[in-house]
Image (cartoon, rainbow, N blue to C red; front, top):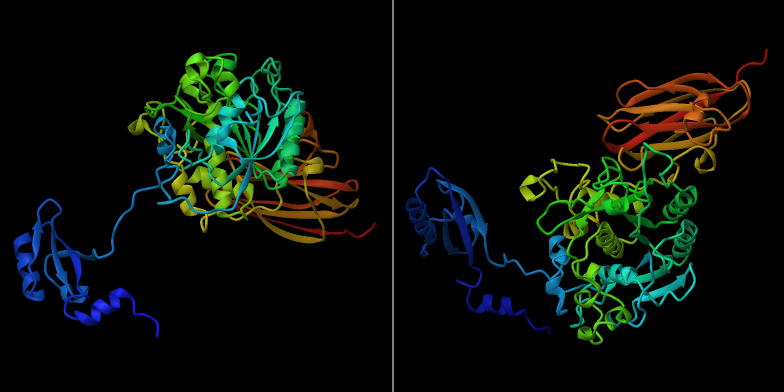
Length: 550
């Protein structure tokens, strides 16, 4: 015979008291606490206590039913078993130096760290100190794209970033990494002069994706200047690599850039590649909640903010050993001056990458845009009330959607992700536009004013064939529908505008193109564009019909 549970044995021995529970009875503002307490005592036969500060009466009773229908009562709540627990606190001795982890609610989801699936995170940077004890067993693959060994980091930047993401957590040593189930994929792309060739970066992104990386961290930025093409550093090679990552299920996270590396500070544009579609652009926050002047601004491509000031993390021991007071210790309190109170959007981005890895370890089936939405839409809104004097409510150019909130992102991950869009990355005409076959088609996809403004599809038309198309965009937001002639490669290129075949640009979310006749045979392009702030699902439909020969 199986043993009875202890609580059931007690109930059998003490039927009059074991099932009794403690209850809180909230008292209406207009009612007397003493009068309600007297009613409770008369109903239960038990002594009731009054708490004036809580405006509540407390009593032990067999059930809530005996407390129902009492006058002056706002609520009745059972308190038995209703407890709260402290969040997990790492035992790493330097955790107290990592103010940024409590600031983003890094471990608030757990009392003890759970066993989660491993997620690979690529750190495309200056390499890593492969012998640092914090990374023992934490690196899945490493390669250099600029010569030398990826296991050596003479500059420290890559090791610092890697420590934020995946330093061993809860090992009673050093610091705590946020993404405790992560495995690192290390790509060394920084030359000795601290410059990063775009060719090396692009190769590294593709290599990391091919090695199974689900998150790509790019703590780097190139100048973006829409007003001066001579100093704008946009790269199609880089853009193609980022699109490759997205198509293959990897989320790309990039620093928006630092003003001291731009033509002026503060700089009003997020750098490349943060400004590319589907990249999560990360700005920096200081300890006081404000946005430092060095953090680039941008109304479109600044997606989320994270701590990026006075950050504490790992450094190569070859760097710290050069300082006698450091002995064999590889942490930033013994590093070069620039790491003592390290600041930069470079160090904000890894926290978002680490949070993305935690989401994917919890829900590995999510697509990159779904993870991006969870991160940004659960962010804590940064306002003057939280310390950011220049921030406004909701999305703004300094912090995007707000401060990273790891616990909130994880709480929504199992059920709160938006639907995936299987057609991405279809952000332009040409080869990136998926081909839609058949004479009649209706598809459902998503679009986002801040990160995915344009979707393009390719449709084959024969000479003289007619096409009609309709668009039902996200409700409450302005959408446009355009048709482009064969040979179009970039729908936003001013030189391509003469290739526009038809358009529907009415205000609102409903658009239609009626009976356009193809003058020549070829692959035409249907463009869906959202032109007012917002995001959501749209439905695009088209029909084709041949016309009678004359």
